[in-house]
Length: 290
Image (cartoon, rainbow, N blue to C red; front, side, top):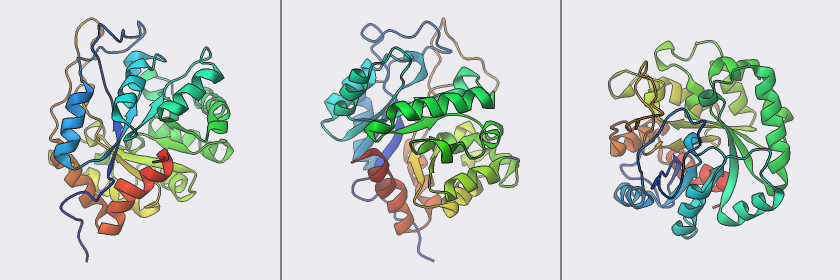
């Protein structure tokens, strides 16, 4: 059996990162659920240089709401090596969307999980409405949600005017394995070709040492459709450990993550040079228009 390469291939992309701060220049949304510290673009670029990552997708984080200035300013400084996933609301004009497209945005995020929105009817309407708005630009819709909500939305991706990207393994719980309720729906969605899934931030689904139990989840996703799976580091790793409340009035510290190990783990999940290239290069290039 051919094993995964030791280093990422040329053109490798980290499909899920955030940039924060400085807070004095980019104020947070008063309705945010947590307050992060600064995580400047310079630190991200240095990390990616060390890892051998050449392309970057900056995802608008929830503490900024629909104020995308921090993300857009970072994209401008990446000089074509970055793409963005924005957050929009009813006040976002078509002109603003066109400006964001020129800046490198290729998707828009509907963050159901962080907002605590698990009503499938509401979620369906949000996804369909958002897809209708951005489809003329050739964008996709990205969502952060969980397996029960995905199962309740069974088939919504077939009705959307855009591809659907699902963050962080669809929040499949690694300890429950590949037979857990809702996971088969996620595999079916991947197999349809209408859905991408990010095998990103395994610490959001696993508490096992080295997240070893996430391997079965990742492997099943990649097997379901190796052309529709993406990897992201989730740098700078916002959020807290399970059961620890997020902080609005104080700073919620970033998780301490071994990013080199995270990349090596993802390449091991892919397993072969061909699948590593799909995961890190080909699939991101197709979706994000690199």
